[in-house]
Length: 403
Image 1 (tube, helix red, strand yellow):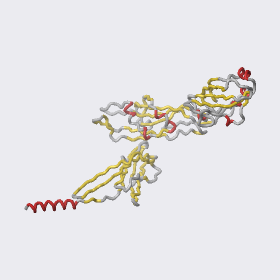
Image 2 (tube, one colour):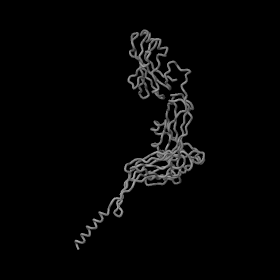
Image 3 (cartoon, rainbow, N blue to C red):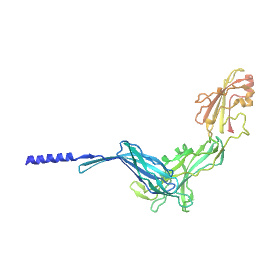
Image 4 (cartoon, rainbow, N blue to C red):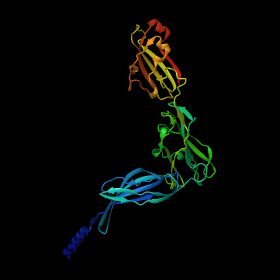
């Protein structure tokens, strides 16, 4: 009896051990969308899951002219193992998150995704998305504008510009209206694009709070967040403000959670700002001084000479330090001193302009010290030293507006 019971236990253990085996699950590809309806200002979220691939590689969306599709996160890896009736099932899933921004209204086919793994190509099916315009003729929940104070500017001339993002204050019965801080926390600046305002976006924005008509014609409070920047046109013609796209979450319904307010299915908005017309004109030829060298803006300068006393014919190094708070110094070249009548009467300059030097410098002409440029030029006195000191002081500072 004992042996039978012991033998029975041994047999049962052997059966259990032999009955557990691993089922190999095949590779698979699937996709789910966050919604099949959206407005022209929203994006559709897409989660694409790759099951048991031989290697982790991102799926590729099929070509489409109706959506702008881009990868925003992933891959997120998860693994799961189950044993049912002695069968062990193991699976590894890689999840890639995409967003699709529609380019037109109507019922549009969101393309499928494809992945080639182990010599086999896997595909998902397209999904029809219904895209509508924002109702009404007023302002939406989130919109943006770029503002400049003029319609024309000269090549290289600094132009003050401001990017304004309008966000309607969210209100809901039983919930306090969103504050400016809560509203700004819904911004998605990390996935936005800012064009010529790229550097300005590192600063905390200012804001104001006007009342505007929304898309239903109702007067509502808006937060207006704005960033300011100085832009320097480099090409003649209509100014290109670059690729600007503002990403913002906007609530549809809010509940109170343990950690605060919870957003239920918020709208993921993508807003292209309204751009002004700014025409860039070439620098006019009429009225240019002979010594003009391309500088545009307000500059302060200081000139030093070394040595201060020299015989006629010996070289003198003139060093000019130029500073500006509103102009790009990379457009400043050595001044054309050989075109200044007051200097050519008492000094001679090398015919080869390459002899203009800079110490220290990254180019033969220019050294930038923040908003400062220092340039040096060799010259030779062609009159007596006493005459030079009398007629042309070797140390000079001043402020000049160009052109």
